[in-house]
Amino acid sequence: MKYLTFYKTALNCNTEDQIFDFLINNLQKSISDWSFFVDWKKIQENIAKIEIELNILNSLLGKDNLEKKFLNTLIEYPKIRNALPILVAVRNQKLKEMPILNNGKSLDFEIKDYVFNIKTRINHKIKNELIRFFIESGLKGIFQDKAIKNLVDYCFGVEVGMDTNARKNRGGQNMESIIEVFIKNVCEKNNFKYLKEVNAEKIKNELGYDVPIDKSSRRYDFVIDNGKELFIIETNFYGGGGSKIKSTAGEYKSLFNLLNTKYKFFWITDGTGWQTTIKPLRETFNHNDYIFNLAMLKKDILEFLLKTN
Image 1 (cartoon, one colour):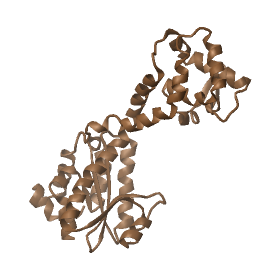
Image 2 (image 1 turned 180 degrees about the vertical axis):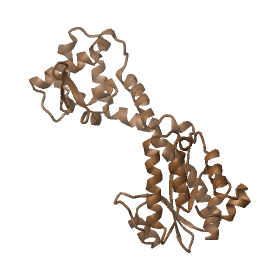
Image 3 (image 1 turned 45 degrees about the horizontal axis):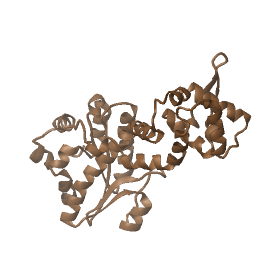
Image 4 (image 1 turned 135 degrees about the vertical axis):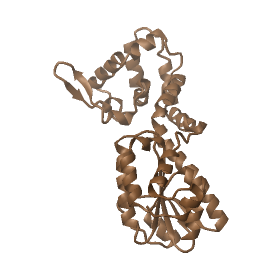
């Protein structure tokens, strides 16, 4: 950690332990707004892709001789197969990596994504697999009993449920959006330039700096040019602990080593997940020059660093 007068004047912290305690004791439990919970636009787009197929399947609800009519409908409208997995709340892509049990006694498993691939001709084997899927998944009973009145509305609800899995990613996006407000404010106030989500090539083309990379896919969350030097910023938010949070701390130690000879690297992190994984964070805090959280941003540490360096 690089000692700054900011810590004493703005945070009333005089030692490394006091500064680290401030970091840990002022972590945010949440950075969510109401848009965090459901991505309605994505859900509507997903449903629009299969809405015709779902409406065709609606014609089967409550019908007699359901297995035969189910197969005949699929043969007449083969694109319907693409819409079947979502009825049991699974993505087509997931089926490519998710073996399905064929035989319980022999523990015979098979990847079944070909069953729903509209490019695959419906032969005798696929017919049998489709009927097996229809029966064993419970869909046949649901269709017969009219437990679902409209498959479009039903899948809309399924998509809402499955979208909760994306909240972790939206947490990271929210963190970037919050931090960009601070960055934009400081840059507009001081006539600095900043870029968001950029690789080394774009930094070179737009700002003229040669930035080293540790992996070809590296995209920095933000870079700021104050007219004298480049500042590189990575951000994240962790509401919970786990192995990922530990590896992140190690990754940013290595990234600091890579950038430190020419550029200043800021790591802005937050979230109460760190309170269960303090040791890796403390090690990186001791090693890196600049680690701060949202509470420090609100105290204007960013402007302090950009204007005094």
